[in-house]
Image (cartoon, rainbow, N blue to C red; front, side, top):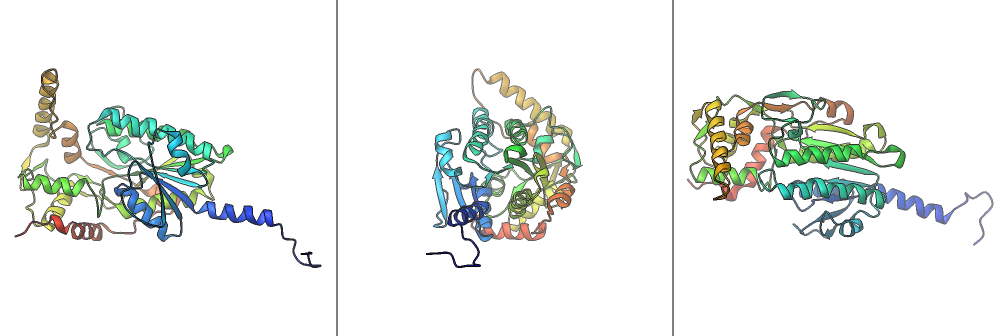
Length: 361
C-alpha cells in the first residue's frame, strides 16, 4: 500500500527492532532460580512485569510463566540458550555456606562464574548482577557498621567465603562499559525467610536434639539478618539503576535489613515462635573458641585414620560470638535502597511459614 502524503514514514524493520529491544530490556535470566533466594527473585521479577528464564541443575517449582533451562553451570553449551536474547542476568547460584566441600565451592562459585561471564559476553547480555556476600570482608573478628571499602578478608573463614571473594573479584573486574557489559555485586548477610532450607530447619533440628541450651559469649553481639524480600529488592533496584547510570558498574553494595540485632536474640525469637526454648546458659567466647580450635586440631591429626566432620568449629564460634553488621548507606544513596519489610514483620512471617516445624505443646 502506498504511503499517504504527510503521513509519518513507517519503517517496518525499524519498528520490529525497536519492539525487540523494548522486550529485551525486561527479559532476564535467574541463574540458581530453583533455590531459596532464586525462587523469591523469580516471583518478584514476574510481579514487576519481567519475562523470566531460570537456569539451574534442577527444576525446583512449576510456573507456566517461567522458561526453565536445566544444565551444568560450567558448560557454555548448556548455559548459552538460557542467556541468549536477555538483557539482565541475576547470578545467585551457590552451594550452601554450611557445606564443607571445597571442590564443589570452587567448581560452582569460581569456575562456574567465569563461565557465566564469558557466556554473558557471547550472548550479548548487558547487565550481570551477582549475589555475593558481606562475609567477603569478614575474618572472624568484630565488624561494626562495616562499609564496602573494607579490604577483602586475607584469611577467609571458610571455603564459601574464599570462593565468594574470587567470584566477586571476577565479576567486578569484568565490568566493561565500552563493550556494553555492566556488572554489580550485591552483598547480603544472613538471608532468611519463608522456604529457607538452611537457618530455620537446622535451628529446629538442633533444638530437638537438645543442642540449643547454651549461647556463646554474653549474648550482646550485634549481627545483620536480612529478609529475603529485601535482598531481592536490592538486586532488582541495582539492575534497574544500572540501566541509566553505567558508572554504578564494577561496584559492590551491602544489602541488609538495616536493623542489627543480638545474634542470640534473633535465634531465640525464631525458636520461641516455634515453641522451643531459647538458650539459657552462657559459655565465654574465648572458652568456646579454643575448645573448637582443639577439636579441629584433633580432627586434623586423626584424618589419616578416620574422617570426621564436626559442626563445632572455630568459624561457627566466630559467627555466633562476634559483632558483624554492615552499613547499607552506600546502597541507600546510590541505588535508592530502603528495606521493604521490617525485621519484626520478617521474623513473624518466617515463623508462620514454618508452622509445620512448630513443637506441639
